[in-house]
Image (tube, rainbow, N blue to C red):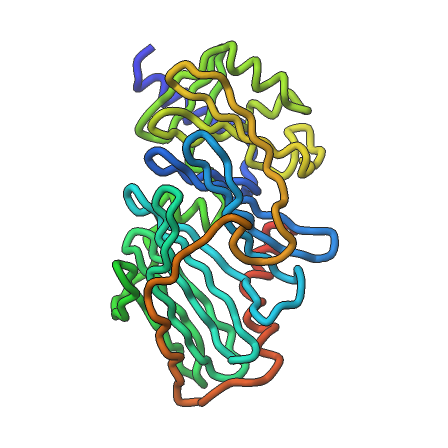
Length: 326
């Protein structure tokens, strides 16, 4: 079978898996990866959990959670940008006491995490800010209304956060669709052996490994909906959706990642477990804060203070989760 024929068969197999937005997405780097899990709790919580897969281990990294517990800082947004051999981690939160929207950028390389920069913006009253990520440019923008005018503050992410002015919409790259729409980056096809693919590379997963994965599944047919993330020395296999192929819901206890080392090592199985109640970095994650904080920017309308702004800043994320879970 030629490579061209194999790729055609793999792409054709996607037609037989009904597409719904994924609840789990793995974003691969060169030798490590980040796992993003969207979930909704019984008490109205809406959250994203980030896990870092590195050196064959899985470590909780960060949680952003709406309506979890009342803090002075409300974390309600986070994104991840691959950056060669490192990562850029963005988080944004609203500080009620200071009436300030904050965006922070961190560089994650290996197990090291360092603050690149922090931007604080005081927005007009009753403003619904929107943060847009330009994954290819390595930049972000904060959009908000000031009367009838739409204002944007854009920043390039380099060794620091640099204000910049450019036009155009975010480039709709595969990572854009993974982070913003929940579209898995790699597929998995089973025909006896398994084949993980990411559009440019195909990795064989032997039949005995496929059988071991299937033996650990509650619904064996889920293997037909598996996704993959191809790394330098192995493949992560996982079921990304919130419902089994038979329509029953996937419970938290059933969430697993399967790592197959391509050097012939044994299959590793990881469970995605809740690691804390509120927003913030996971226990054990320490990010050094080297840069100094930039002073808040005050615009024409002055300092905002109404309590309604707290609710308004939560609206964009709430709408996104409502679409996902409706």
